[in-house]
Length: 440
Image (cartoon, rainbow, N blue to C red; front, side, top):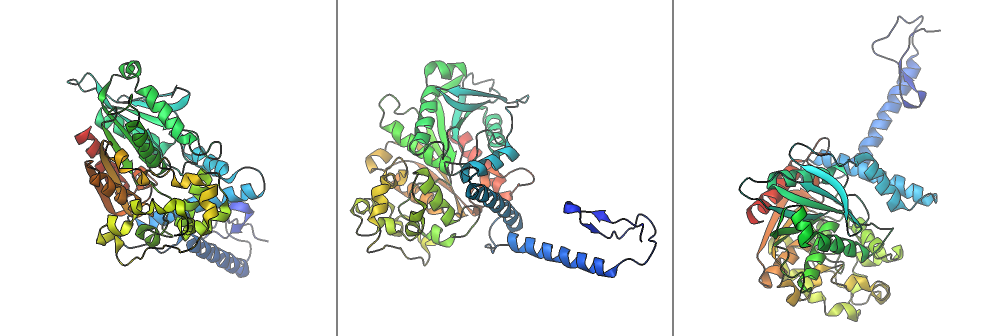
């Protein structure tokens, strides 16, 4: 019997230590050591197999992106298991995991005052930056977080840090909206929340309370938040009492249409983290409280085939063969089905609603929009949504800055601090804030 102790691992497994704590009473079992090494090697190989995915060489920090993607996939699989067992909706479970690991209290610093409140019944987190001595009134950004209309929060670390940086560097007031999420509410309730909160903020007495210049307000958001920001901007142009209330709109890799899931960027980045095409289509179906049976048909554009009359008039508004430069279309071909599934649009007419798909809005609406900033990333299924919107806005006479990052991936702008700090995250955030500083 040996009196030598090994190191104890999870589950009670012991492996022999290379530095014994005491002299063994007898010859150690080589068989046990060999088994432990084989098991360890197998576990390492399994972990590497799970983490590794082929990525383009141009993407920022590829191994770090693989680890981030593996973590998110793992959380998704846990939430799917919880759903399968009937314990909770998978999106509620997934968001519980995300918020639990990342929630941050409203903590003020010497430079930025942070408070949680509500605007007309909608929760918001307000970040008040330091005033400039020569400017008694501050500029402001209304920010809408991303997450597929179903995930994340204005109160998690990633968005708290982004809004804190914006408030401090811009000497601004940032209003981050905590809108309600799927599956508690569905389209168009998310839009109603952001419109209601923003209208409340724009009241003269509220702007005065926060010392905000009414002529220097921007609406902004990333991903699904960019979608909601674009929808809000369009809605405000059609409201006489709100027209010209926004000086700028800034959209960060926004999702802007659900008619064509085979644009060049969807084809190029079909399995690219952290937003594969299949996942994006499921977010759309969830947003509309639709049937998952539609997902595969939508992926191949069966919902907007030539025999679906409702989609025919809108197809030209996102004709990427004319809206995208050749450097983006490359050798990709349009996917247009002759016959498809008309039932999808009949059951989900929201797919053709400009409030959900701002890219298909009328030209008369687009021409009333304010100066616009759109950030896109090469390794993102939504790249072409943003580029096509920029082109349509320019054609409508709107001044547009298109800021494209060749090494960027979807979601990168919020990943700026350890352990999820990406070089492209820092560069995109700096570029975004610089544009706001120069134009707001």
